[in-house]
Length: 196
Image (cartoon, rainbow, N blue to C red; front, side, top):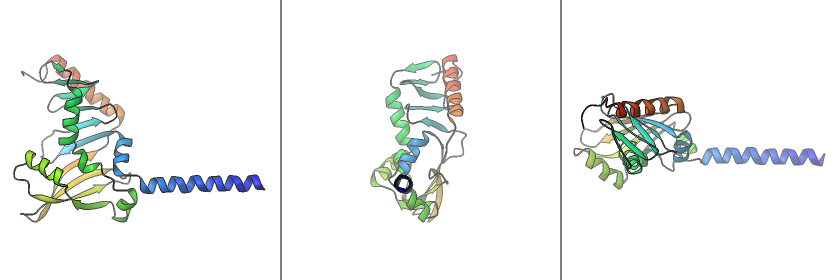
């Protein structure tokens, strides 16, 4: 009888702990756990960039750029050793990591029906102004999927008084990511992206 009661108490503690951990898990931990992220920028170009956050690599087939094992591949057979630096630049400016990897919890996301409105931080406002000189947004809206991962960022234009899609995110499989990465590196090494 005592053994059964002890087992029930232990199971209850584990269930409560699991529930608590999931409720308070941040978006950033979900993004890092997912690891593979593809970003589609605002424009309608076919450009997309995919990231492997754990291994600090990325690939853009459209631009013919990739980072793998700390090496940066681009253009016509060009390979350099500044891959870590390029990865950080792309992570911050293309993935817009600080905008999606926040401390917002799963509980908050669910409470807000998977759409969170928030102010754009001063740091992100300055960064966005560099990328888009006509930038005039102070508020953003992030839409999440049922796995609590960001799928769309919209910015509110204070002059036009309307929301516009800024970035979309998808989460490829490891196989899909590695296939694109290897195709891009092979194309760079073969000189398929033209002259530097």
